[in-house]
Image 1: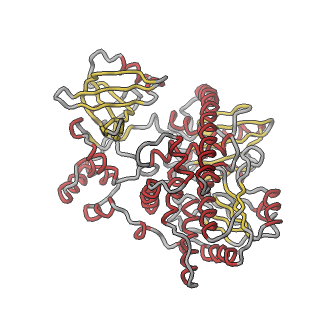
Image 2: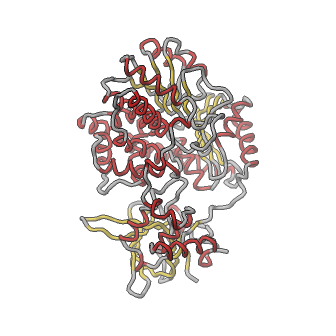
Amino acid sequence: MSFLGVEHSLTGRRWVGPPPEMDRAAEMLAQQTDLPRPLCQVLARRGVPPSEAESFLAPKLRDLLPDPRELKDMETAAARFLQAVRHKQRIAIFADYDVDGGSSAALLIVWLRQMGLNATLYVPDRIDEGYGPNAPAMARLAATHDLIICVDCGTLSHDAIAAAQRADVIVLDHHLGGETLPDCVAVVNPNRQDESGDLAYLCAAAVVFLMLVEAGRQLRAAGAKGPDLMAMLDLVALATVADVAPLVGVNRALVQQGLKVMAQRQRPGLVALSDVARMDTAPNSYHLGFLLGPRVNAGGRIGQADLGARLLSTDSPAEAEALAKRLDALNTERRDIENAVRAAALAQAEDRGLDAPLVWAAGDGWHPGVVGIVASRLKETANRPAIVIGFDGDEGKGSGRSVSGVDLGAAIHRLASEGLLVKGGGHKMAAGLTVMRDQLEPAMARLSELLAKQGAGEGGPADLKLDGVLMPGAATVALIEQIEQAGPFGAGAPAPRFALPDLQIRFAKRVGESHLKLSLSDGMGGGIDAIAFGAFDGPMGDRLANHGGARFHFAGRLEVNTWGGRQSVQLRLEDAAEAK
């Protein structure tokens, strides 16, 4: 049954409220804890019983951090790492070019610097070298280093790691492993096929952090002391959110504690990046995912691949400022490129049909640095797994994004094993691939078939799931601050979304090209301001701007808006429906 009777909203969605058993659980929480009902609705959705509400709202890393030795090869990796430190061996770090790779590399560089060692950073060029270790680069690094640590990559790089004959290699990764592992000192990866899967949700930076925890334990056992790891949690938090790792289990504590560290503004790179992004409030998961993350990524997407890792690891405020400005400019350039590719890809995908198990598009000259972002946009539009591929000659490099319940990484891995792809891999929600032009159509047909078997393509536009009803007068800054304690919110833990029913529009104004600013009233003295980003990209903008006095139900997420030193509540509007 639809929520508030909304079967077809202004964005074409059905509204779905919490099931009766969740409402009962929220009521029990409210009675036994005296917490506000809206907060209890969020806790009930997360499956938190009354007895655990207090500890859930104040997660302690020491209570949630797993024993690093639960992961295979962990003790061996940490021991070889410390051997290199003790003997002042030459260490190279081979990192992926995204936020997770850059944060992972920065963790090691900063830790080693505090121990008196300078590591060599190597980040492959996305276009010239592609993802992960390659044989020429590994051979060059091995000729001048004793230990190479591959972070956020390497699990499937058998040939490249074999080329590093003169150096030891450690892999610290989280991507889906194959049936065999490369021949090296250690492969620490919660997504190895022989792992339990209990920690499969960790990003690479969290795996690196756990390795440093184990290294610290081994140091203490030998009567020595390592750097302060708690001060490095800002990097782990950034990577976890930007890599869209589920905010569950220890990830939740890592991000919550990391945000507190970031708020202290001690890391020059993140301070400079926050300033160019014009962040004027304490950081939260939104800032990490939508302001900081894209800028760190910009170097790997369309610029110099190592800019993000260099920014995150520098201890020089002057260098940090210069790198942050460069990344900010690249991010603006990236947006322009993305918009052009997105328009072309969406038109092509619409012609092909958005109701198939797989939505895909391919084009000549589409920049490989933006195909992943565009795939994400197609996925959101169609509520289907999406692949976007850019061709350079006969070879195409693509990226895919999936929807909940559909394992895209496994399907891509299967496709590669069947010979339809040059290579491919990833994890459940995201994957990369390389395909030859003459194999494009059969590869996409086979991928669509594999995804259909997992249930892709069975749903229509995604239902809008709501946590409950809230009246404008109850939406206070204090309530939002209490709800934030149930966070951080993001992948696997969506921010609570409430319906504000039967409101009239007092004021509506178009802002920028496609946004809409509103002032809403319940007619009884209660009101709230709202902002709908991208409202005019669909039918919602015009209908609300030309409301003609009609009343509407509104749905979205509550946030605190800070302006001129004053705080007020704002609704980030996602959908609306006419009140019958």
